[in-house]
Structure formats: C-alpha cells, structure tokens
Image (cartoon, rainbow over all chains, first blue to last red; front, side):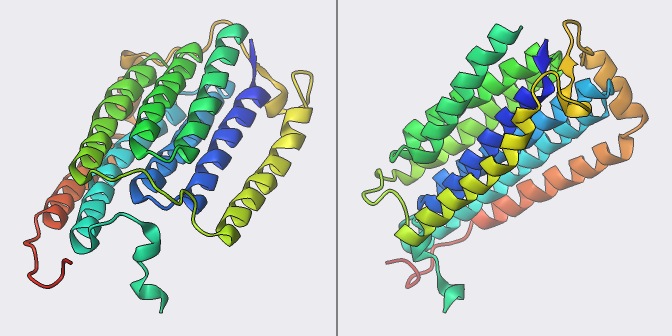
Length: 100
Length: 173
C-alpha cells in the first residue's frame, strides 16, 4: 500500500531538482539531462494517477511521452553538436547572440 | 511494497541530485541511468510492467547511449566553474523553495487525507501488460500512434540535417 501523496511528493521533488539543474548548470548536455529528469517526474505522476483512476489511458500517454522524449533527444543532441561545431564549447553562457 | 518504494525513492532522489550537481557530465549521465532504472522499478511496483520494460529499453538504453555517445564525441572536460552566475544560483534555489512550498501541503495530508491524493494504491494494482496497453493503443489511440510515427520521422530527418552540415571555413575558431 503506497500512499498517493508519497508518490506525488517524490515526483515533485524530482521535478524541482531537474528545474534547479536546468537553471543553474552551464553544460548544455547537463541541462539536457535535467530536462529528462523533469520529463520522468511527469511520467511518474501519469502512472500514479493511472492506478488511482484504474484506467490505462495515462499509461498510453506515458508511452507517447517516451517517444517524444526520444525524438527530442535526437534533435537536441544534433543541436548540441551544431553548437559545438561553431564554438568548440558546449557552455550555455557562450551562446548569447540573441541576447544583445 | 512500501519498503521497496522507500528504497527506490531514496535512490531516485540521490541520483537526481547527483545529475543536477556533478561537475563531470559523464558521471552525471551514469547517475541518470541509475535514476531511470529506479523510476522503472517504481513503475514495476505500481503494476505498469510494460512501461517498466519500455523505460529501461528506451530511456536507460537508447537515449542514454545517445547522450553518452555525444559526451564521448565532444570530449567535454568537467566544468571549472560549475554553476552560472550567483543570480541564477539564487534564482534556482528560489524556484526549488517555491516548488517545495507547493509540495508541503500535499505531503501534510498523509494516508488519512481526503480526496484523491489521500488514497493508497492497493496491493493488487491495475496491471499494465502488453496486451492491455496494446488493445487500448490500437483501438482508441490509433491516431496518436500515427502522429508519433510522423514526429519520429521528422525528428530523425531534422537531426540528420542538423548534424550533417559542412564545416564553414571561418565559422569555427
């Protein structure tokens, strides 16, 4: 018997750790991995409430989130490669053309 | 069941924290593998067996191989200055504090709480087997499945386009 509130709290904690990493990290790939953490915490909420509502629809949603995450990984890492090719670094502070 | 949950939860939080803070991104990637496997374990405990398998194959397998491969390709050294500037660090901490302030009222209504959030997931949860999920996907969500196929093809074409640019003579220093 796992209380739903524990699972929700766990997903929230993981989400906030991921959000913290996205804001604070400078390495593009590290930022990318923190985004994966946030996606996973959302998936965990989906699975939890699929049990609460006794319906498999949200597990299907998790499957679709996973495939979108795979597509995102492909495109995101290609962008990281393109950035690295231009600047020989993956530092977020160096990619700031749109800033000024 | 609850013991299993606590073990996996501790592993998840510790490894997630390691992903967000370790200066060497490769160690971060290895911790992310541990984290994703722990999430798969939680799925299995919750009865989503197919999702647990898919999580390990797709996330901990395919996506992490891609990330580690790119890390190896770029050969990025660990960051000397790990975090951006101080303002962003404070902003991140403020965000985490705000999110925790949202969590606390949730956690306060522990098992005896009212409403959906106060329930417990029973010893025999709804079983998310391949058969059950497959029937739902191919009967009710067939259109979404087609859309996902289009999204994946588009993503692959886009990533080939992005990664296959010729090197410009003056663009790289």
